[in-house]
Image 1 (cartoon, helix red, strand yellow):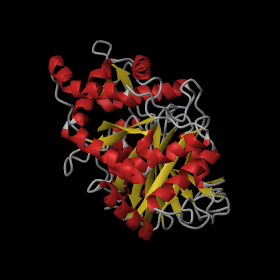
Image 2 (image 1 turned 135 degrees about the vertical axis):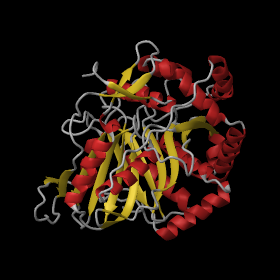
Image 3 (image 1 turned 90 degrees about the horizontal axis):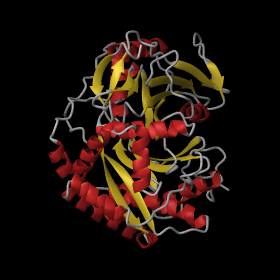
Length: 462
C-alpha cells in the first residue's frame, strides 16, 4: 500500500522538526509526539450526531488517514494516502466509575477521565480500527456532564490547528461536513537566498549555546511515561492575573508567562540542590494569517528562542522585563522568519541525523523546558451536539529532553495552566512544587490551591 499511494502535500519545515522529534521519542519507547484536546460538556451530547459528524468529517478529509513518505530523489517528506482508508473516525464511548449510565449507550467503565487521557497519551498511535492521525473519545463523568477527548498526531496538527479542527468537527456534527482546504506550499527560493535569510537566526543560536543550560531530564536516560496536571483559575483570579501580566510585560504577556515558567522550573532545580546559571526556552509563534484560510492541518509555526540567566529569575518583575526586552528584539530582527528558513533548509535531513545535529548544537538538551501561552480557546464555539461547552483546553505532550513543559491557555475567561512531565525527568513532588510556585507567581501571593486533583499534597491542601 505504501508504494501505491497518492501524494497530498509536502511537510512544512516545522512538521519536519516534529517528525524528527517524534521518531526520537519512538526510539525511547514513547510512541511518538501526540497532543490532546479536551472539551468539557455541560450534559451528554447527541451520540448519533457525534458519530455521524465524525464519520462524515473523516471521509471528507483524507489527510486524517495519511502517512509520511520521503521522496527518494529530493529527500523531502510528504503526506500520502493509500488506496483504501484504514477505517472510520468513530468515537469510543466510556463512563467513569460511579457515573450514571445512559440508556442505549454501550460504554466501557474507566477509573477516571484523567486516567484514560494519560493512558491515550502514552499509547502507540497506530490508528487501528479508525484513522491514523486522530482519535475521538467520549467520557460520561461521575459528577454529571461529559468530556470529549481528541487525541491527535502532532505531526499533522499544532495547537491552533487542533482548535480549528474542533470547529470543523462541530460543523460536521450539525450536518455540514466540509473539506478543510490545505494552505498552498511555501514558495521555492534559491539556496543562496535561503541561506541569507537563515543567517540572523544562526547567529542568534551561537549566542544561545555560548552559555551552558540544563533541563530536568537527563539526556542519556530513557524517558518514562507522560503525566499532566491542571490549574484552573476563577474568572476573578484570571482577570487579576491578566492585569498583573500587563503591569509586568506591557501590551504582550509573553514575557510574564515565560518568566513564571522559568521560575517554576528553577525551584525544582533548587529543591535538588542545584542552581543552573542559564535557561533557554523556545516559544512557538503562529504563522497563520488572521482572517485568512482556516486550515487546521500541519504545523504552521515558527519558533522564538529566549535566554534567561539565574540572576534574572531572582524576581518575577525582572524576569518578565528581560523576556519582553528579548521579545521586542527578536521581533525587530524578524528572527521568526529567519528560523522558519532554517527549518525549511533542514527538511532533507533524515530524522536520526536531524536530532543528532540538534543534540550536538544544544549539548544534548533541546531546550530547558517547553512552553507556550496561547490565549483564548475557540471563543466562537458555544455547544457540541446539543449541549453547552463549559471548558476547553489542550494537553501538550513533551519529549525527554527536556522532559517537562508549562503551558497557559484560556477558556471562557478563565486561565488554565498545564504542567506536563515525563517520569525520570520529574517526580510527583516536583510537579507539586511547580504548581505551587506558578500559582504564587501568577496571583502575587499564596492562595488556596487551584490544582484540580483529588489527592493534592501542596502546602495549600495539606
